[in-house]
Image (tube, rainbow, N blue to C red; front, side):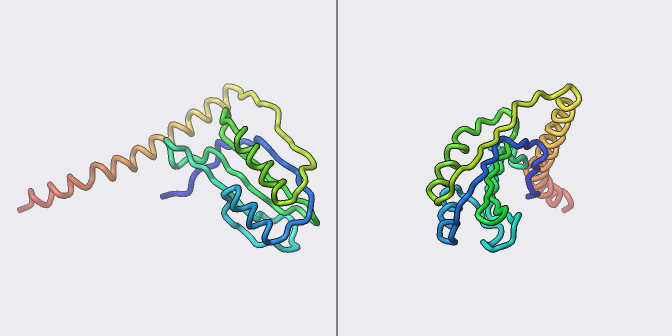
Length: 159
């Protein structure tokens, strides 16, 4: 399966966090949020430590939500949620805030970008990209479903 596309995602939430985070607390945070470990806890700033990808149930090649936890600097952390426009992220935001507090981090700021309005050109680009991805997924499905029986018939007809 090809890697899922993230082109439709927009930043929906950014939590600025502060506090000490031991390895055990990081592991707990990852478990509570369902994050996959990307890097290990260390002194290096701007390091992604965990990520969670939620694919569209209908179109598996499209990412619906991506949550990322990063180490920014000395006792500075960031948790971001990027999602497809119109996706309800309230439960993800609630889960993220609770998990960060349980891990011992303090939420210093919460940034939720203003709702954006797409212009006609952007809407058209999104429609075209979505149509292309749907067609690509359908072609792949057709190849799987249709090629196998026809190959079996071809083998029978050659005799």
